[in-house]
Amino acid sequence: MRLAERGIPFVVAIVAIAVGYGLSVGLDGYFVYLGMSAVVAGISLLGLGVVTGSAGMISLCQLTFGAVGAWTVSALNEAQAPGGFLTWLALGGLAAGAVGVLVGLPALRLRGINLAVVTLGLAAAADLALVQLQFPGVSAGISVERPEAFSDDRSYFQLAVVVLVLCCLVVYFLRRGRWGSAWQAVAFSERGTAAAGTSVRTSKLTAFAVSATLGGISGGLLTGQVGIAFPASFTAIQSLALYVLAIMSGAHLIDMAVFGAILWVGVPELLKRWGIPQDWGFVVFGVLGVQALASGGNLGTTVRQVWYRRSKKEPAKLDLAAGAGDVEPVSPGPPVLTVRDLSVNFGHVAALSSVDISVPEHGVLGVIGPNGAGKSTLVDAISGFLPNAEGAVELGGRPLTGSPSNRARAGLRRTFQQDRVPPGLTVGAYLKFLARRRLTADEIGDALDFFGCPAARTPLSQVDVGARRLVEVVGHLLVRPRVLLLDEPAAGLPHEEHVAFGERLRQVPARFGVSVLLIEHDLDLVRSVCDTITVLDFGRVLASGPQAEVLADPAVLKAYMGETEML
Ligand code: ADP
Ligand code: MG
Image 1 (cartoon, rainbow, N blue to C red):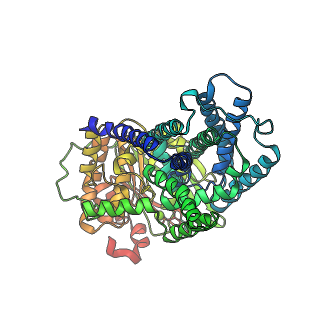
Image 2: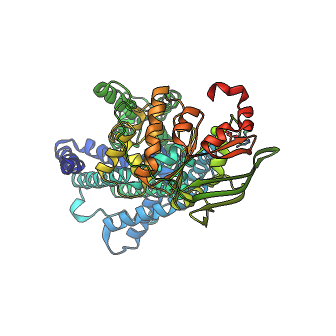
Image 3: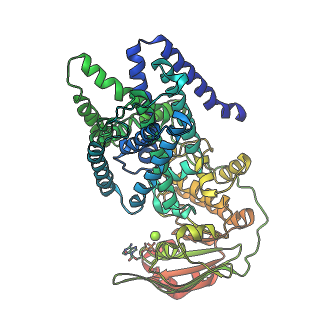
């Protein structure tokens, strides 16, 4: 079964090539030429799908990468460089990929509209420069030679289809691998990505590089199609229109990138037949794009969601009804995580003042305190998200410093109070992304069952938010970090599930070998799970120690006066 599933993309690829072949021999010459244009646009859209659709960054210079590919192929052709067209095409892709990394560097600091301005500015500048410089060989009238075996239009179309199919396969496997998960994660939450031990910087740069490489291949292929490259094929306004089309169709989905390419070529062609100037095509794309942005969805995702609901009906929920089984409890050992004299100020607000805590090895430390006491700030500071935090953090006797992703890799994981689980992945893909190591299907299945979470194949977009946050907990546990910090993991669950979750949590140290710091409001749950408790109030430690002592402490009772119903 699994082997058969793995073969599916290759079967689809072979069918696609066969269809391309059929079209190349069956279609009228004019349509074969249009088909070539659609294939060229498809490769470019596929690239845009990676950077905008998957990684969520605005890139308005996709055709500039195309121009880099076209330029490289033209220059190598003019110089009659060894290797021939296909080698030049690959080099064009690589050159564009390198430019993509350069363009991606500002993307590390810029977001949203600022990134849009930078990339559109680059596209406009490249546009103007190309008109002045012209492509190599153009003034001498040297046209780019197609490879000998593919010199006529029909066979060149076949070649283009094969290149497109190969690009689709590469994107398919990248999207399913670590890079693809990281793109989805970074699009949804940079903090969530860093907390998984994945570099936000690398994720963004790989997205730009892959996207630009595909853009470059597309540009090179276009040069072989038309013979001589013209600046008019790579204008900023066309880059903008292509972006809109990618957003509208949902080009991060491979079939939708191909569909978008058919629109890209088909809409202007229809307008031409109806005697309407082709520039109106941009207006059509613009209107469709505004509609897509306004509705916050795109064609591909919408179709898939409808499809999924039809086959499954309900959003996936937690199922904690089954018994948790029981493992021999282990007794807590010496401290594995120690925090000393930790202070955090936000302007004049002292969110934490000289806080000391310690999490015992194989124990569960509960951190409680009223809203605004500084609990989330404590987790942020320990996990490296607050560079202005003062104090010392030690994990397993060693100082824990550096970026959030470094700390995650050193064995400290955390979850978030807000939902930071990327909806674009399946449950299983997300677990693998968090784990940063190979997980067996059994390992994944057991852990999901233990917490009553939906099956690995379920898309996270179909999982309700309470269950999604438990999937996040499962994922971090599968990493088997030394310490896991949980920021109100069960908030929002109904009471019975809350209690059932507590039962599971109590077994976590023995089952996963992980020590836990648990922030929790429900004192019943704290009482049933935590060996030791630290109480925070106004950023200070009010009490700390074994749970029975702390919960009987008059100062704690007083601080909770307004909330006595909880005690
Ligand atoms: P808790 O998680 O215990 O409810 P928090 O750690 O979220 O509390 O907040 C502690 C205090 O720090 C609150 O007064 C809050 O308003 C303040 N605070 C938290 N984050 C920020 C921030 N990024 N900027 C300014 N103030 C903040
Ligand atoms: Mg909080």
